[in-house]
Amino acid sequence: GYSDDKMRRLCKEAKESGFKHMKIKVGSDLKDDMRRAAIIREEIGDDLKLMMDANQKWDVDEAITNM
Image 1 (cartoon, helix red, strand yellow):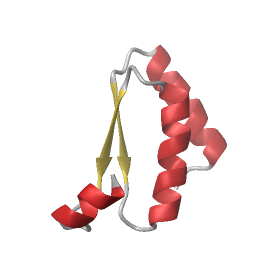
Image 2: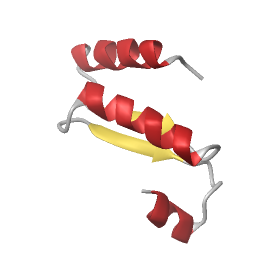
Image 3: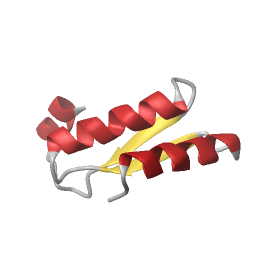
Image 4: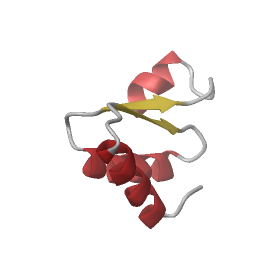
């Protein structure tokens, strides 16, 4: 995956370009997913939507718990 610095830069660029939604792939390592999601949320703020795609690695109960 991308380094933290690259994620921050890409988020800033996307926000400045007018994107209203961001999507992150999750499901491999929950601690890493949470860390990356926190970085993205910090960069995009509360106005943009943050979507998470686990590629069917989580069942419904896991998705609810992990979100």
